[in-house]
Length: 399
Image (tube, rainbow, N blue to C red; front, side):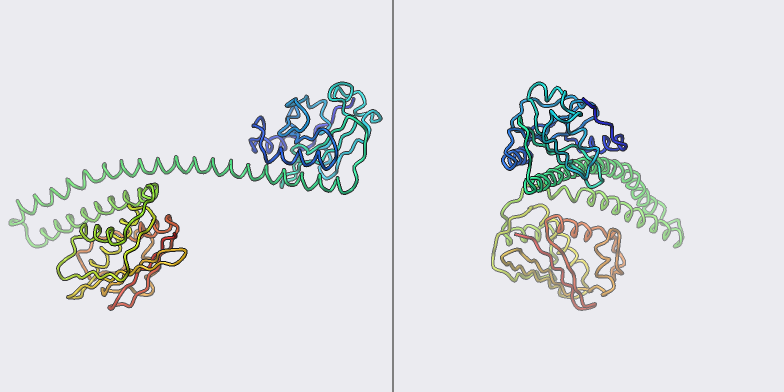
């Protein structure tokens, strides 16, 4: 018996093999179907998906064989992987000096015939073989060998798919940990930053109330600057925390939502001013989606439509349409409008456009959250605007 030489790339081959995480896993239908087909096509009692580890050959799938593994020293497949681009066929093991006294030949299962197709991954490493055994010498025709090659390629595809899933699961776990760390950081930062900011805001009020009369105009102006800057920074911290947590809204269970009822709920929370009229253009319908996410989207869009408006009579029209695939919301107002050059960047974090409201402390976070939520619901959002006349936000929610 001749023990197969170790491939020149053995170190890298084993490193790649272990990255698949396939060794010592349970039997799976995808592989068992292939070995069953291989045995049927080749008319052999035994068919195996054999993986060559450092000191053993381990069977991911075995048709007609009870044992799970053998020593690598006895493995026919250990010879096959040394020539990854060739099929190893031993028509009669008793006449082959490499195998005639192999324990698998002289003892159970008494292998007299072997054919193995190397399982070569995209990097060129032979991980093992798809092989068929018989207890009698035999030949395979060209059609049978081509079928074995096709089945071997399918095994490699399955291995690649499982490796990708393993990598994606690891990446998902890593991202989850990073998100949890970021959320924790945002909460701590929010608390640790807002406490001193609130103290500064309180102190500026005390300074203004207690010493405003003794300070000149410039001194009072500095106090007001300090107060305004503290408010803006406090709002920014609050916005960052909201943004970091916005994706969590999507984890809520989806439910059937009446469009009228959620708009009434949003309007009540917004405290719509007396000079504002919100009109509806739709027949009542129900949408199956995240209630909290949809409410957050509408709160931001309707709130902006009312806030950024310089008309004596504020008019906001809400239209909702549906087709076979989606619901489409359209929020149109008669406010400031948005310059064409700004319609893309308004959805970016911390991006603000010039506002006619000098007291506007917006930090450019609301629309970023809206876009994030719409996209996580599977939809998209667009805006078109005529400066000084109207702005129309359109977003979709898939059915």
